[in-house]
Length: 380
Image (cartoon, rainbow, N blue to C red):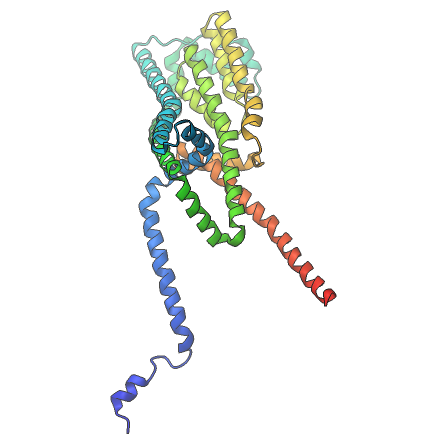
């Protein structure tokens, strides 16, 4: 005869569906634990996520150059990584700091002249009146500012207050962007120094995610990143740097702000003439005729150099619509600041290319499976 406590021990807790409930509960606990762990890790890494992404992009785009540098140094990877950091900081960060310094000095000089009452503007050219839509109001305001600057400023006091707050926030964002850029350069150097293990881990990950076709997706991702980073962001950096050097040589006020504006316009694939033409016109009112002509020719060359550099730097890259680049640049700038201006186009172009490739591959795979099914009965 069975005892009561023995019957209670043998009795299952859940009678109906217990065979399936146990494995489902274990699976839910496992996924919940993994989700909690990944969410926690993401929260910790989130402040550095943009810098890490940009460092990864720099590493992928610069890896062929890094291999040549290692070969020139007889395979000394650590020395090559250190030299890469020094060169990157010299070529990218120092010009940005120089342009930022000119912007600060220009703002200080402007504030000094406004406080002393010595700020004077030249009268506007008559050609301004003929500009479409904005010509007449711009001419009237410019004429008022050249004759009575205090009254002109008081008429747009609220707009100037908003613009001042915006410029202060933008300056803070630029400084944070430069700091994140420095961090990204160090991240890129570490990734390239450990490229062998990184490639093996990346290959294992994409194979787990996409199966046997994962390596093809990884190769496509690398080509997309290099194409966008060199053909769009690289050309934009070169154009903005050359424009900034021209502004400095011509002693144009707020050269740093104008160079940053050129960088934004170049990345979003708009013509640099939007900035360079008004600056060239202003140069004719500021400089002697010969230096002004030389500066105008320089601006024309900077504006047209993209048509020479882009085919060279794109090479055998991936064709990405300019609308994708535009949305990526604007969205990255709004979501992640200045550094997002660089990361946004690359990430969005990468997602667009991979999704498009996946959509094109799936119908072809389904068609191949259908052909095999129709061939099998015929063979039998």
